[in-house]
Length: 110
Image (cartoon, rainbow, N blue to C red; front, side, top):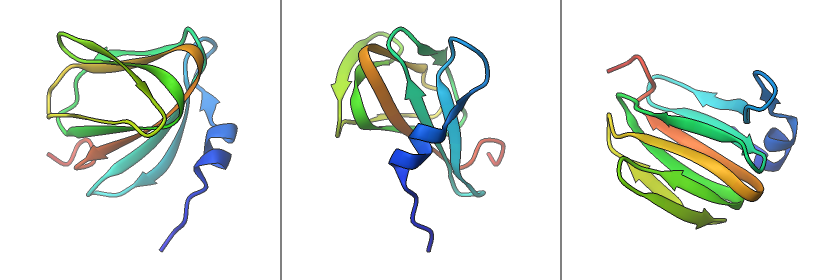
C-alpha cells in the first residue's frame, strides 16, 4: 500500500512551461495512471481526447470542466467522468484549482 499526500504533491507539482498548469504523476501502472493538476486562474488544459476512460476529481478550489458540447462549473468534491474518446478539458477561473485525473486503463495499453 502507498499513501499519497495530494496537498504536498500539488504544492510540488511543476509546469512544463510558463502559462501551463503544473502537473505531477502520482501513480502509473498498466491498470491506471493518476495525474495531479494544479491550475492557476486563467490557465487551462486544452480540450483533447483519450482512448481510455478519464475520471476528474476536484480536490481543491473551483473551475470549469469542458465536454464536447458543454462547460460545467465545478468545485471541491465534484467528480466528472468521460468515456473513451470523449472530448474533455478544464480551466481555472477565479481561484487555484487542483484536480486528480484517473486514466484507466493506462494510456497505450488499449
